[in-house]
Length: 362
Image 1: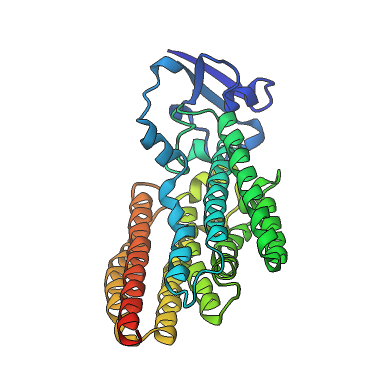
Image 2: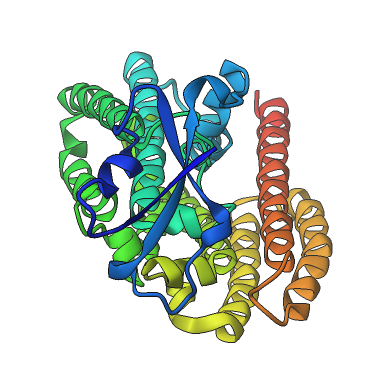
């Protein structure tokens, strides 16, 4: 077993991070030599364990793809599509453009996830936190260099497919330019707003909430409605909850890596209280949407179930007394399950609502 310790100032440091220093070995970060919180990032010394590629334990291809591309996170963009598609009153504006749009959305999501994995690895966040990202680079399954390359490939694919959509629906051009600019400066620019500005995370709620909802509705129907916009804002609050939940779990690692997050600026106590109140806002936003846009008798059962399970999560959140320990991971897992419960209940309600409406008004 061989180890190599390098400082950030070393000319070889970047090649070890990228995984380009050798074609036969991987440089895995040694978790036993983590620097202290007060260590300056510029003077950080990193110890790598040099492992032959042949000795790295790899999962099956499908498990690797699932974890590396974070397939489970596609729910963030596919649920809005499902919601709007279920509620389309007229025939789809252009089925081919719809298919192209969904494929572009998936490619873009994968590109952003891979870019974030690459950036977090290079800046150190994924070295300090043992739970952030896909962990594919840290486990030696793939190099950071290959991850960046595939991010570019998926990004190029999304750009090409998006251009075809704009040819078919020119009215989306301004929205596409706005969204494209936000995505680039948030994730792909050298000083990405997502990790260098405390308010950068809020842009994700805007992008995956109202902006995505407007774009998908125009793609499906050729126009937009207040219902679609209201859904976009409600969905944006849920997306931000997941984001803030991850920031809360990685509160200490983010400080170590020099990343700026909204929860990081608040600190542990205020961040915990903010997360508590934000979930209440999610309940209010999604509950309000159901009351206004749907018969209350259909929305009430799901909302009651969600409020019931929210009680346990909020109680456990308030019981946390320190950002250290397994409690932070447990809260992240519990919060994400709550998010998925909300998605499942909402999906079930929409399917049932449209089924009943179809019977009554056929």
